[in-house]
Image (cartoon, rainbow, N blue to C red; front, top):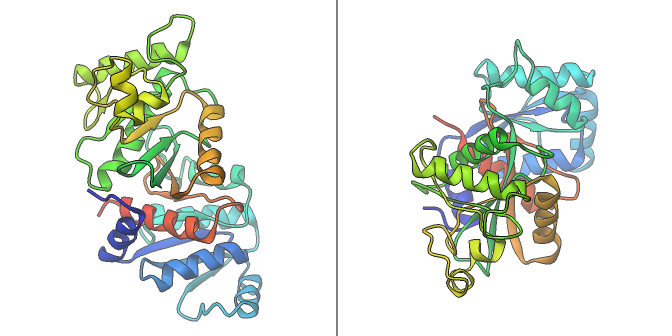
Length: 300
């Protein structure tokens, strides 16, 4: 089991180098992140975008791209699609968003002819190392699905479980987090939590253990769970926090980033290959860790 972000970095460095296809790569922050991953022996880049602009940015910022593959395509939509084709054809292992709108990028990822569809929902998984918690913790979904219904949450759980399994957790423990730890017919999220938990009990969800609803304190604190009389294999020892909607997910994610002393990595999963979709607000370290997390989740 990987327990720290350093463990994720070491795993990414221990497997074969991954080929990273970058869509619309003419961006300093993206090239810096890719350069850091390259120097850490994690990836070999394939840059798709305006070749002249890419070389200019690299030269002005002392980024050596002489050994990197560049595919010249000045149109953003075509560049995004070519970056996806690199993965779907087997020439790359994973993909990263560059200087292109998220909608254009994801449209290429989901292209019916050349895209990376699996029939499962795409979802955002953030993996957090926090000094106040005893192991890595995944938080999902903070960025993709606005108000997921029961079916969507099942896919979100499966996606997150695959990430944590790739990090060495054989049966990750999933806590569907709600405002309360009891089922309340007036609170739809508690009904979803109860249904997913029962599916887990009956073996309908393979490879993970789900128990909820749980309030956040019960999910991450055995003391809080015991105080409330909650007997659960998941309570106080969750590997995955399933949030009820994007608002709760986004608030928790940003609270962790800006108010807590955490190390974090995040990727989009549910496609045929990991998708690195970082924010400009993310630190260089977060971007590097996100690439390392994606590299660790590639299926060989």
